[in-house]
Length: 326
Image 1: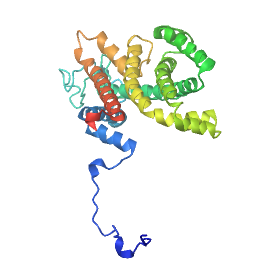
Image 2: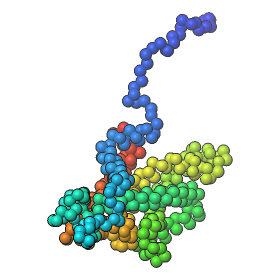
Image 3: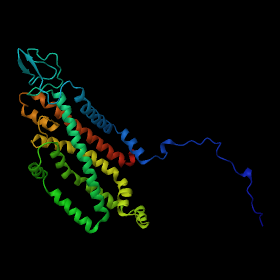
Image 4: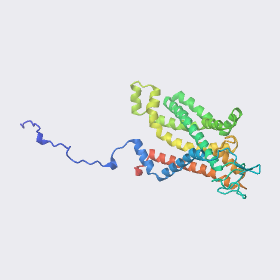
């Protein structure tokens, strides 16, 4: 019989003295770090981020540093007469040189207000409306969809019938009803968007919840006695953030465009307060004789729509990258 083997010290070699290199190309990384890496490599997404950041920067600071208020009618006094800076073209003064010491980068409107200040103040108002409504819609829609998808059965049937009823009502009908009970202005636009834009969020949340609620870790939590709302908001919700963020990025330009449309048709922002839509409406009324007035707000609107859509596309690809992109 062979003698039993007894391990000896010299039979082993410690690896601590070896220079072991790690292949960084295949080193494991967190999910969100991978998302950020893919997003930063996307040139179109970064272009959109630069556009949106620049517009937000001007919307915040341009009205602050401007020498004119958004509702200020600019005028000079000549021989005890008030002469208003009406409809001055960009970077030019009137024929008499009365406003030669003043600079109007975008010109003035038909009652003598600086279009540079009004454009960026209007962009600020439109962005505030968009961000506030989308944040509220995200909270409402996400909670509604997760509860509907998790409980299923009669609860899901009842909640989805409500969604079908709300989505079947045209947006203009909802706005018309609200306009009867509410004054025109920012809050009318916000409530109109809140009542209509949460439905898309709820459908995405419900679909993700139906996909996740039968996973093993959810069944294990339920077996261990975790409550339904704990499972919904602590375990299912974090795994639905990716599609929700993508939906938010695509919903923001829709909210901005809807606000512009409502202001354009006269049920949005009330003068002298301005928004992108009200400025486009004012420029449209004088487009045949003063075409320069519509160019600044419509350019800002186009760049915002383009920027947020590029960011949305970039996030969608980063959150679910294709195999060839990894």
